[in-house]
Amino acid sequence: MKYASLVRLVIIVGLIGLIEVMCRTGVITRFTMQPPTLILRDLADILVSGRYNAAIAKTLTNSAIAFVSAVVVGVAAGVVIHGVKLLREALEPLFATYYAIPVLAFYPLLIILFGIGDAPQIMIGFMLGVVAVIVNTLNGIDRVPRVLMKTARIARLSRAATARRITLPYAIPFVLTGVKLALAYSLIGVIGSEFIMSTGGMGFEISFAYNNFDNATMYPLIVLVLFTAIGLNMIVRRWERLVLGRRGMQ
Image (tube, rainbow, N blue to C red; front, top):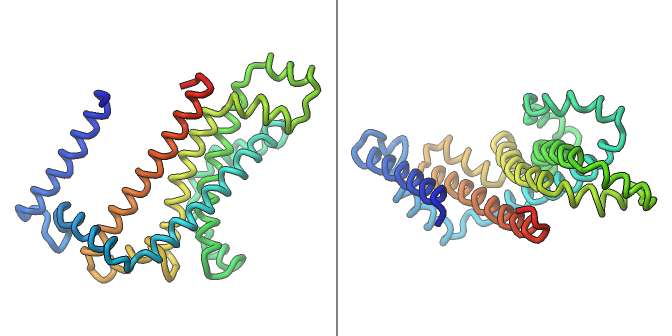
């Protein structure tokens, strides 16, 4: 185990242990939060019982759709925008301030456009993730050496062929950074929108448990969301290291 990973593990275990002691000694009351060991026990009971399987499947499915859409559209848009100088100059101020805009504020509009259902939640996740992919794709393409672009012109490659064979392969480290951000943003967007208006999903169940002071459900589901995000991020990071290793860029 690397030293940094060991330090990270010690810090996490230490914080969990501190919270456990505070809960057991009454510094944090049971009405506010149960000890982490009991949270894990309640989470195991929830997973074994399967009573929230439909909610978990709904959230993960919608997040996956939002994530894949954000990556595909984001990479394609990044390539197109990079090739049109005027378009990029017009959009760059928007990209710079995009995340200062509360995307969830558009939820009523999305309900009008798409109706009450999964589509508005997917769109929120997509809107949060797609710009991260576009910006990182643009940053990666900016760093492609001019000699490679000249080679593409000499070989008379089309824009699509140039992107496929030269620019995107060279920009892959930046694109993968956008992919990791899109993964987190898509999950945040879907779960956040489920808090506002939904009849299912993990966000809805967490909100419902919170309003009913059901800590035995709320905290385990929050921990499940945390574990899910960490697990998915580790998978993407592993894939990133494999891709970069094959290209000699790790």
